[in-house]
Length: 405
Image (cartoon, rainbow, N blue to C red):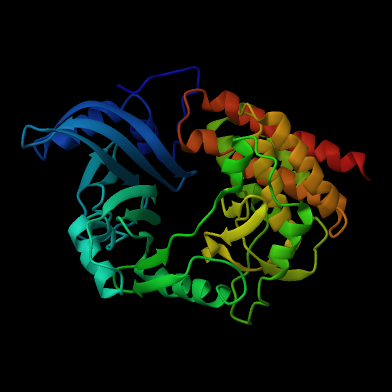
């Protein structure tokens, strides 16, 4: 069953289902719910938690079960409390609070997901979009319950990605790719289904900058290459969404971290206070979630950028901080630590020439603070210790900002 470690017990008096769904109550809750459909729980682990203090919690479980047919299954199940769900979703009681429950891929917020996980239906869909008729293999690349999923479809002659979002977000996703493809190398949309919330996209060549750095490759893009790529982003129109920066989102991240790790509250408040009131940089087109796993390279040449549905209008320094923050956090746990840090140092030297150096470093601290929520979100075995390490890294970026004043 799910293992315990030195992590603190997390509870929320305004959301009693939280402790049930991620604590010792998770096993009996899962077992009792699965019994209602004739399945038997053998083991489980928590794969992801989305928690909004005092408001809602969504927990994804990876579970080994004996299905009603008698066959073993390794499946993903989702429990959601504190949020309204569509009609027809099974709801169970847990500590006086109603908990919605479903099995992947039957996500009530993502109606296109069952289609996108059926090889025969995906094959037919791709033919209708102009792809060749052939057998394909599907692989789940990402799933955030109630929000989005990415499925990779691979055949002998083609590889395509299906992005599944809420139907009301599909048109904007399609629009973002269509508009940006005229300016920067982004995946080309092969077609989309608004009612299903599915956008089919070409697979791009190259490997991620993250993969290259992890492999200790020295063939990586320069800071000027990164800046040149971002300069190609088209000027947003009047309807473009405003993308908040990491310093603006810091209070939300600190609220979550304070709720799950109250011993860190004073340090979290310090970081938030230092990021408050940063001088505003000139408005610019931004990627919105710019980091090393979003950049595709071939040797040292940038050949693609992915996940551009976050693009909009913001501050260029925020994109630069996103890349630096992810790199410095990545370096915490990898054998390639020195190489990644050396590359980050090269980038920041070049980025300092185009944005305020103090503001850049403070924004990086905000990025790292956001990434400090990751260990809890994926329920790492020692998530508290890893959260504190990332908080310390954010503090070091604030110290770096003070050093260049």
